[in-house]
Image (cartoon, rainbow, N blue to C red; front, side):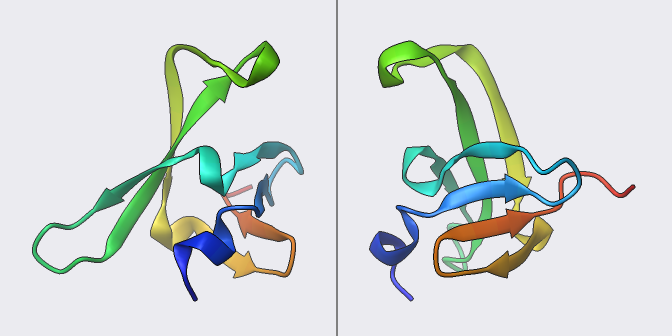
Length: 79
């Protein structure tokens, strides 16, 4: 699967049911030695789609539980 195919999917938190953002709005953290994706950094988006401040959330690759047709389910906390 290509990143372009993933970029329009919504990130949904399994624990809370909240929408975290769109994958295309995230930054990737990549291991330079292996090329593996380690994490996504999700910026806070304010009105009109602009980044809001320096706050962001980090989602580790191992927190991804399911990649579906329209969304990616992640588990940010164990509850």
